[in-house]
Amino acid sequence: MKIGCIGCGNMAKPILNGIASSAIAAPEDIYVTDVNRDALKTFCEACGLRVSTQEEILCACDTVILAVKPQILPELLPQTAEAVNRRDLLVISIAAGKTTDYIGSFYHESVAVARIFPNLNAKVGAAVSAYCGNQNVTASQLETVKTICESFGAAFYVPEAQINIFGVLGGCAPAYTFMYIDALAEAAAAAGFDRAFAGEVAAKMAEGSAKLLASGGESAAELVKKVCSPGGTTIEGVNSLLNDDFAGIVKKAFDASLRRDAELSK
Image (tube, rainbow, N blue to C red; front, side):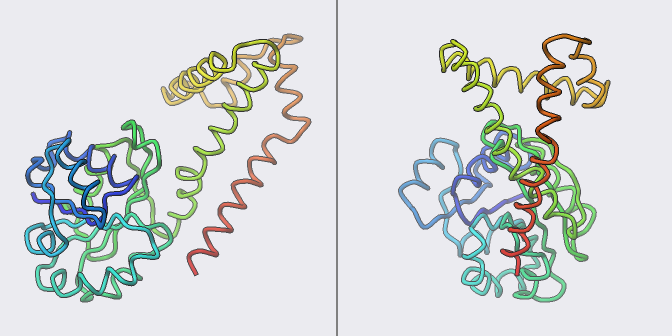
């Protein structure tokens, strides 16, 4: 398989690193282009990938990843239409808010268009990514899309009608989590800890807690109860969070991000 990637920005790089480190395609069969040619060359040389052009990608590859910002697509898609239509390529977009119907409207009606929604944690191979495809994407092609996502983290098939919800849960929520970790570290520092040390402990605590929850033995609510002892220190903090409507604050942030996604999708 030959995979081409148009765009080599902050999200494309961990995706390409994941693909290159897996058995999906040999590094020399991964073609990459970007408007910043110097940065492109530096990255590709470090990973053993092929520095390419848009034209070469569209001629040589059978799978093309569009790793550009949503506002670039109206200019980019018409440039790719002739080659995509002629060669019946699998097109994968990472652009938020741009549906497969929108992308497919620039191509012949039979073109296979998929979307993936990775998050920033792809930088450490720990992304959670949603993927979906239009009616032209075959089971084999959808498996390819899944395998690409799994090369840099966990992958979940999500119907496109719900991918905006996943976008907030998987894409926006890391920022909420980082804020929570940072707030914990600030509180510990105010109580007397060294700030850097507090940050390290808070991050490790969150990592371990997520790992325990992901092990599947018990639900989050059950684990909260396990940490708490009647009349102990944890229950005091938990009750404080409940009294301040912690869940309501999180939902308010989630809904705000979801509303903004709807506005940007119009």
